[in-house]
Amino acid sequence: MTQKIKQFKNRAVWIIFILILLAAFSIPQLIKNSHCAPYYYHAGNQITLENKSTHKLNDYQKKQFICLARHAIDQRDGPFDWNNYQNVSISVYKMKTPSEYGLIYKIKPQIRSKKDTITNSVIIKLADRDLKGKRQFTIKDYSSGFSNFLNN
Image 1 (cartoon, rainbow, N blue to C red):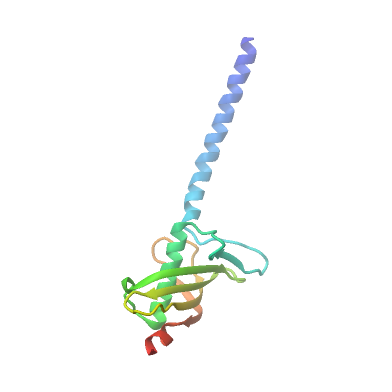
Image 2 (image 1 turned 60 degrees about the vertical axis):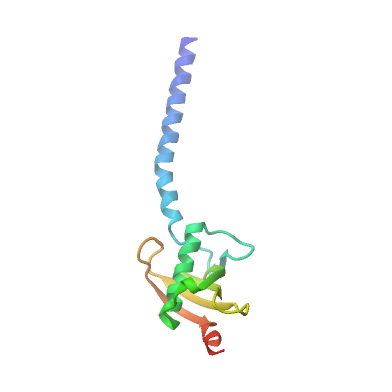
């Protein structure tokens, strides 16, 4: 009887040890990935990451893509005081080529009486998947509703 109890204890100790090792190596990777742009490799397919019906981004990633969209708009049409605008929606697409993301960012001005929605579309190429700190990117394509909005 004591031999069986010893074997059971040894197995339990090894199982607990392996589970602790798995947790020690997987938790930091999960934390790191939560601050990175999603990586998908699907042989040339475009993937929807965020829109009204699809929600594959966590809150941090969504906020960072909004910051990227605003920074791209500031580079081309700005700078803008973003306190004067409300977020309506952001749609994020992983494009066919590596490190490229398509963003459709809709905002509404707080200072106008009309219910105008400004739609901005931008395709960016990230220099690094990490969304923490300084985010470097290049603008591949850009279209903005600010020119129509400001001319009215």
